[in-house]
Image (tube, rainbow, N blue to C red):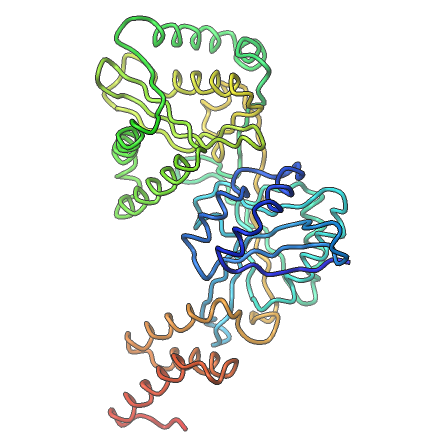
Length: 421
């Protein structure tokens, strides 16, 4: 009834654009991090390890019914001493707050069953489903394919982090038709009064003002944002701070260039003191708050509070129906009337701890060879040989694996330790 195709190249993914948008629009559970623009970034960043499973009607009349983005990793199983594959929902290398799949609601049960049955027949030992935003009934339909005889399903709730924040909680505000309606319905009397006062302050002729990034100011504004963000998180993130900053810069810039970014900046005179970065999902009418930066020396006003109030008012004026705080149950989010959605984190693994199907996933071959070469360079030739032989068993004409295996044997002969055939 359904055919599952595997889309592996950016060009083939780009050709899916009309179909992807149609399924995205039809799916009540679709979200920004499953948008075509976001998944295109995943292909650009992850490269050949990224693919999409696309489900379409066998008759061809119904078009595409579902899409599941995946990233294919490879690893050496310590217990089995073979290379295996791990499938993860890519989320742009952990930069998507939510992951999941798209599905038309008309024949949900049949489509999801076809998708899951195809997936279970692929070569993998681990399927990591992290930050999954999905309804309980869809998840149950998906998991039915992974029987207990062959697979083990492990729930992975994270709980509070070291700062006491539960990142499986996702506060979200459903927006009414007017900002006054928002203040009346969502904000407490104390918050309502405070937000009105703050907005009057930045709209007066005094020292405070708010600007909104455009093409001419975005390069300046993003550097202000990231400078403040680095100051706030440098001690917490340690040596990783520069890499994280580069990722933020790339992701925010790409969103801005695609017209999917809203960035208000709070100024005290000519001095910027706060910036918020939001993704804008016009198809699902949602504004998603992603990152904030503020001047720690600014104590006269709350930059975050006034910028969120400004952004919510802007979102309502633009016809948005939701203001999404993404992951984390920080207390301030609930002062805006947010209620939680919950993420699911689970792992499906084969009971054999080996790939469910024979062989390695073809798109993960390059990663296997890269890992083997590193093992060989680090003086662990026995681990490298495992991978080289697995690749050649699957593709005897693979020139890189053959060359590297021969170089390994040559090294052993030179050292007098080669007993291989």
